[in-house]
Image (cartoon, rainbow, N blue to C red; front, top):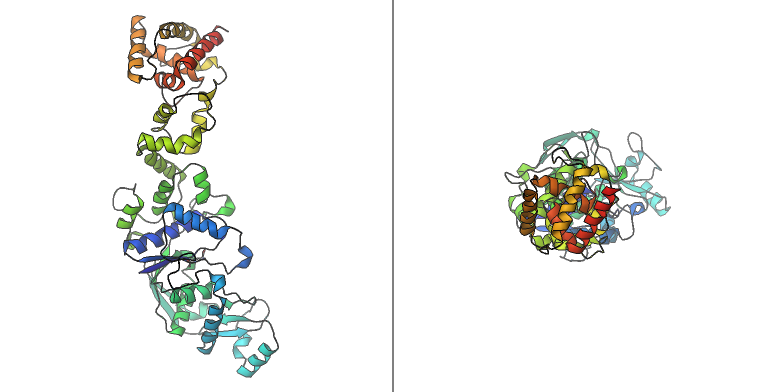
Length: 463
Ligand code: GLU
């Protein structure tokens, strides 16, 4: 089996594209086949500088390693369409001889039947000798039916009279997708064509070209669209996220890949699957026909799952770059420990830890908590007890010991734990909610900073 991913270098990798690349890769690898990268850059107006490198980068980062591609020759190159112009010309001329295509000298759109179909060979020679601009159009029989079976969408039947005789070679000499995809898929030995279902309706035209050349038609696997809601497709133009955008927001590559695999395919069991597990389980039969909706909340959840499943050390390495705003000497590993069960997107870490580096502005109202039965007045009393007790206490790195110590302190004064712990946590953060409770925050901040903040809170509460 040979599959290919054939992106156009547009400068970003949108989610639908990456999903196609992933499915091409998974289907090939599940069947011990080859996965080929081909760059479709025949629309020169859309060409963006650096765009090809970005494709290499994303495929490399996501682990979708291709067996053949522009920088990995497998004997079927060149793998960049703009380097194959001669090949398309040769085949276009052959197709003209085979009556599958014709020269067209009309300028602009052709309404109804193309008059150029009726030019005889000497008229054509004359116009070519005259250097008249031309395109090469597909010639489609006006009667008959073209049929094929798609692995996902089933049996497709189209009347030939409903197919338009589209351009195969443009006046600038470049082929259109409609021609290049057939020539390349054939010459590159592609056995399974996997692509978005926007190509489903043109596929009968491609099959007519295969038939004219007497080439074997590949197996087709058209994929359902990825939508942002019931009616709209995901699109960069509407500001929808690309792979790079998701990375910038702190989603892990593996979580993105895992989530994208589920956009149009369903595993039999567990949804959290590594790339190797996806290869093992991916079967064409379970690809869905209907559009799938890109659900950012599900991706968030999945990202959280990946973060939670890491070892603390690995998680710590992943989040370290998100601690850049913290310059105070605090226990970052302890910070990672409290964050790990709570983070879903890495980009949220800065907000979640905004109280660590410097105390946030005082807000008396946060000390009032119904369930804890606290208010600014009794919080002041509690903090005075805490600061006094901690003066001679140094074991800040031992969460269990400090928790026992504070529980005993509450007991000693006949108070519920919350009456001590809520004010202390607020004093250390000036925040309604924080990752971790007072014990963890004291551990992260260390004794010196903890005492400083407790004293500051006491001063603030006294007004
Ligand atoms: N270059 C086409 C695109 O980016 C590829 C379609 C295909 O996979 O054949 O949409």
